[in-house]
Image 1 (cartoon, rainbow, N blue to C red):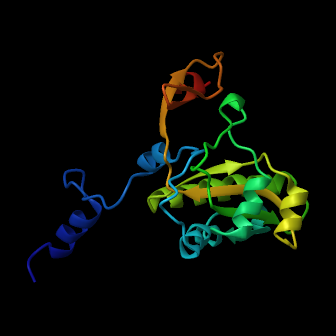
Image 2: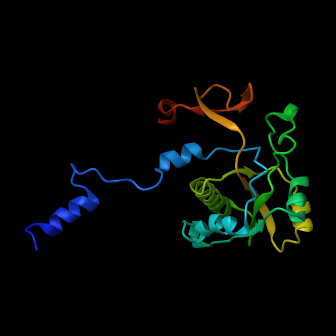
Image 3: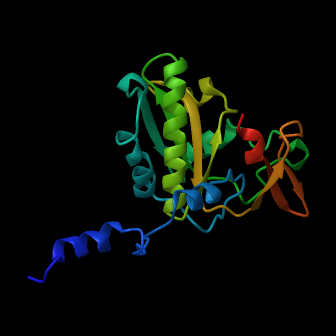
Length: 211
């Protein structure tokens, strides 16, 4: 064996300040930038149950407040259940004049997030972690999504015959919109808007985020 073989292999794998490590896949920053809220989806792409299972699969790997792990998930793909969800959600509240989603761009796959206990601060912590993790997984898989809090929980529970109360819904698909982030000052409007078909999402600058 050549002298310093293990040392050289360590440097090749972990880097030594000089060796450039070949990156595999997307960086977290890249995934975060691609993780936008889509309100229109491509109908020609039909999300499969197996894809939703892969997305929910992150949830037994992520942190949980007090490790209670109270969230449960109903997977909904194209069909009657999907139509029932669409009847009981609202999208694009900041742009009511557009009546989003546009006809022919409605989502058809959903993850209904339920809780085994009444919603509280700890459940909300788990919700935030789970939702972000699942959406990042969707983006990694080449899909897109949106978090939906504007829905009729009683109707969703009744029509989908859920044994637990729904607390949030994710829509998943191939996004069909052009979305761009735009920097703002903290005292400017945070409302998203559209110009010439492009969807703009204001984000407070880094300079103002740090106190």
